[in-house]
Image (cartoon, rainbow, N blue to C red):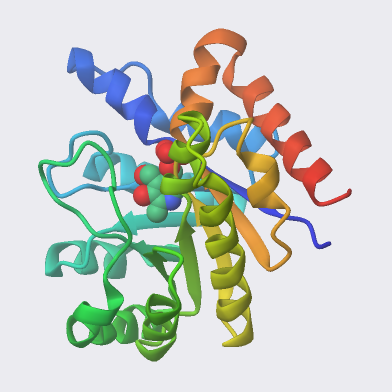
Length: 249
Ligand code: PXP
């Protein structure tokens, strides 16, 4: 199986920094550390309420990724403000996500089926600017087809429900994994590149990484949490090893 890329999401370094309202720890330093140990790219979500990543972080992350020739995956809501920030930076990729201010994290996938008319022109303008656009969706055939219809090049399958089901020992976990596999195969058949992410930890990474159509995982919260105990570099390296084992490398 082909090698799976690992995008490291550094949002929660900014969460810790913002708890003090000062400059430490710096998510840009975390991004540098992640790239130094083999992260294939950096993912950051500029939320509308700026609760973790700030505009200045995006400026700095875009600069270091450009300098190091590594992709920045800019996660954002489908709003005029986020679109103009994406167009100003022209990151390697933009991942369109749903956003509700009161949610703690991105709770579900983007409803591309219902939002098609709003999403399609945004995808077109970003694509025209050279940005590779991804839609973060639930593993569902209609959402996959809609992502293709709006012109996205990539879908990122939401693994949150699967990871939560595994953590809670829910009997439905296996069925959710099957839905992820089916959606990955459907997306691949439609010519979409397939990514996955949300909630992945050492326990859930292998079943997800073993889905053959996947090309990239985006992982954040668990790695930043694990960095408290073993350090960011070793946490990323361990995740990398598990991904490689799952791919039979
Ligand atoms: N992918 C997307 C689209 C996300 O919104 C997030 C969370 O910001 C992640 C991946 C990473 O999720 P986690 O932080 O739970 O690993």
